[in-house]
Length: 148
Image (tube, rainbow, N blue to C red; front, side):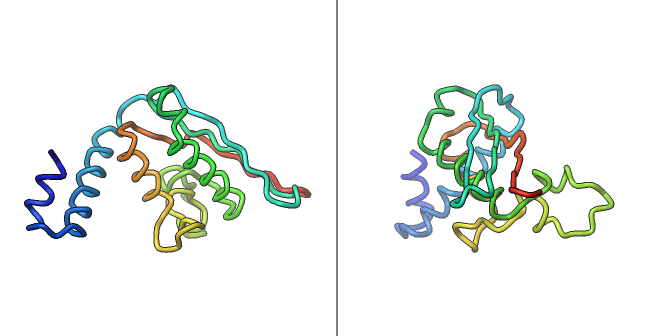
């Protein structure tokens, strides 16, 4: 039904209809952000050379979504992001007031996504939220480097 409405609204322009559908999905994801996230998964990533690793805990509402390809891929990408970019905080809300570095450097959700420099990590998470129809939250992460 949303597809038909988006096509009508865009007067048959498929690219415009896709944008409208994306906005609808993001709005729906925002409405779900208050739901509890008691399921999820923990994903690890070890960089080649075995000198850098990361663990990420990503929570969702149901175990069904936790087992989906989208959720597993998101968790893997987040673990790679943590290993590559060394964030300190999940979001700018967690950031210490005395932190001098910009949020784009130290906050995971505000960082530029390593696989697509035109997008932020937060955009990737929102996209998966819209796709699976559940609230998704990054609970915690840890980065390990040999010698640190």
